[in-house]
Length: 132
Image (cartoon, rainbow, N blue to C red; front, side, top):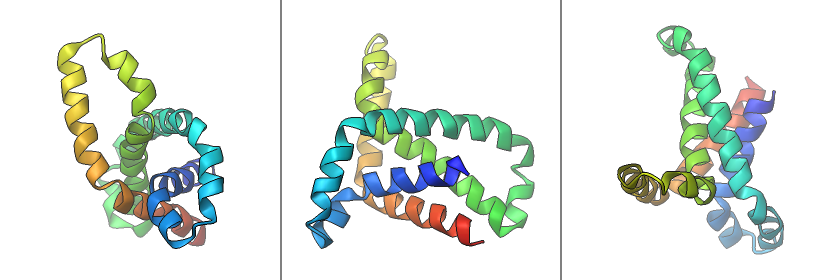
């Protein structure tokens, strides 16, 4: 139950520029959430990795059903969006190793280009997981 809710929250936070462009009143809500987005991101990253480890034995069977594919998609999006949202907190840990910092900056740059579509997709997957 927590996993889809976290996926929806991460999706909405990362899609905030699109939401604020369409609903300017939402800027106040996202301004209140902004100080906590790093913690939400690290939590989503950790939970996504945990779910990935738990889901690996079922990975081949996950593509035979819609719900399995949705869970796999939510895992991937939670890891990616968790990295994007938690990058500010994680960059301090990665700064100790120059190679890791360089690779993480490259991945972060690639992910921020598709941040809004991933956020919309994550929110949609999270909501649809409650409907199916």
